[in-house]
Figure 1 (cartoon, helix red, strand yellow):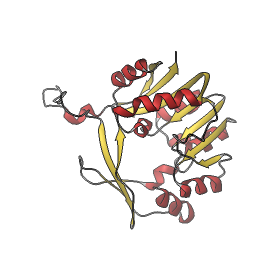
Figure 2 (tube, rainbow, N blue to C red):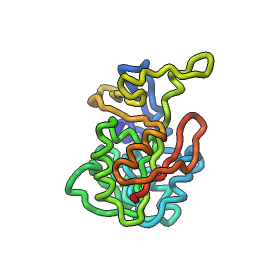
Figure 3 (cartoon, one colour):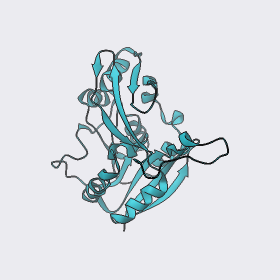
Figure 4 (cartoon, helix red, strand yellow):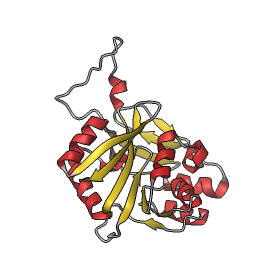
Length: 231
């Protein structure tokens, strides 16, 4: 993704960013979408940006579109991404505090009033087994009274029958766990797990690890924005 973001930034166009998964047919991400302005963002992203307060952490910031929108509102934001290329682009675009940092890097010890995980931000958790690690890390990074705004999608619509019921194997692997691999031109990324999680399951795990969860707003297609706060 970093290679695609860098090419689009420097040339104004990009080739296809291909997405592979063992569960789905090959897909692609329109790279220009990663550079959208706030007026082109979905409602749930606009709401998250409007509600973000204090010292803000934008996780998986990509091209910096959310960070730039926050700066335009006069808000203080740190944008992090694991891609060095993405961070270079963010800095060139004017993101004032862009860092090549892994969310789970133990040397990253600052604390924030708001943590944003947008564009199906729950994916960074990886799988349900990663919930404990994720919420422990959030406790380390959140200031007292702080809030996480995270969006996700409930993939149950993929299992809907003609009569409106859902055929899901409850004894099998959680239906929102997807594996992905991205390719841009000849650059191939590693396979990674990405978690799409329904709100009830998210709220259950939040409760287990000392957080309360609420739905802030619903999107147009089984997606939602959640607010997570420490008890």
